[in-house]
Image (cartoon, rainbow, N blue to C red; front, side, top):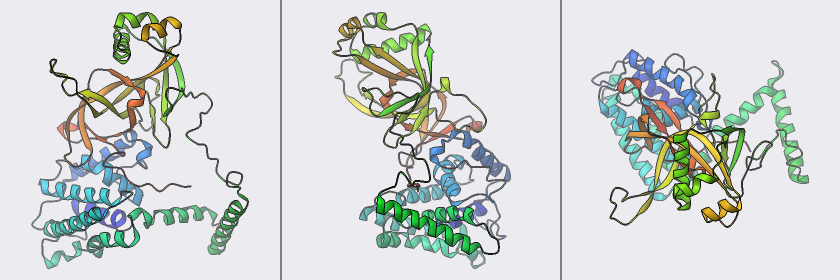
Length: 442
């Protein structure tokens, strides 16, 4: 925490903005122009609306004020936003590649489990990274020795620390910092603050011991905890979809003819029936839901059709979904070979269909009443992806398509790209290569 987020990253930002201990760039060219850094700060602030809260705290304009930037803020900016915002902004690509190499090493360090091969990769990777850091920023000049604080050298010992104490999440300072934050409101006296802290700690210990001794964890819990896996008022879970829960608002939907044709085509593929055999059993008015929650700690995603846009809302309408695609779809004479592929898109509708009449069951070949939940998605037309980080870029969306709701895996964030006049977006997915450990209150 202190080594990376509160020292190394802030120092790199100072170097890139020409504010590191009065040093110039020397023989290098790593400093970002003022206009570029201001654009990065503005894009950072705008990303607060397009990156879901599950990724971390909302970030402000880091180009104007970093006084409120905590370790958590720096970690979110570094792992998720910076690879998109800094792309093609340095005069020479080597500085960007060097920083991306650091992000890859940090992602590896944040894995929940690490093998011996992973630890060796961390050790070798930081050795190379520090050597390149000295070449790019220290430049082997005694007058630039201040660019090599002890925190840079400490990177070489991260692998040793992991071998001694386990993955970094097992020994980092986030839990202690959070505990200190919980103690701070208990200070009621300026003259005797330590007495207030002592009383607070004693009270917490006493109530914890009572919980353990008499098994009163739920009864004496100071915070109301509601399980995400329980169906709350206004929600709905269908026996055919045990992995998710539908959430309000719920409204009727009268689709246009083109949209209805897409729904019928999707069902024709699902039930292996011709569209004319399905059309009679679809009502003219369908049911749409505004949200859905994936169980067992999954994300909550929103349908854009029923999402109210207002200042401060963090977008949850972009999702990652997986479907099986025929590898030989453009070769009609070849045998079908299906493989699971990952896509990203904008969730427009969550539609619920119910087939329970005897005629519908017979026509569709069903042996019991069946519910079908469909997700109407506009896929992101990916133009290119980062070769090593799980980041994908797009400018436009494709035509609306329908997939089963169970295909949706998680929500994703969007970071404004400064390339091509700022018209594109970078997709960041915290469930893939950018997954990181999170400290949560139990």
